[in-house]
Image 1 (cartoon, rainbow, N blue to C red):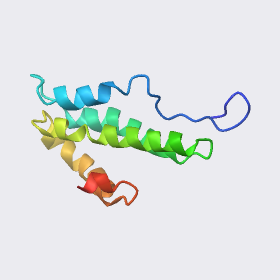
Image 2 (image 1 turned 60 degrees about the vertical axis):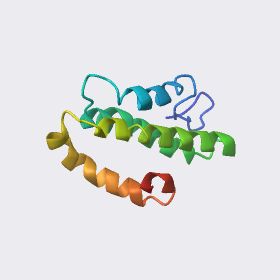
Image 3 (image 1 turned 180 degrees about the vertical axis):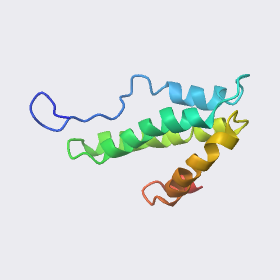
Length: 114
């Protein structure tokens, strides 16, 4: 994508709604409805990937890059809430497992392996 000045547009996520992530992490676990791994895989992971890709953009300052990496981690840290009692583990885990394995081996994010 090109920005208005012809430079590559920086896409990541902004801080406007990021305050919701800790709430989702905490209250997703106590929700009466069962969460689905497929939702994590189709909605949360693409956002995490977007933040990761954006963090590598040459158009960002060091602080902006760090912020995008932090957003990526915060999105990943939602995973335990989805694993508490997933409603679709039989259908979704086999497609999610390779992504989890790669994420835990990613040296850029050692926090995901701990």
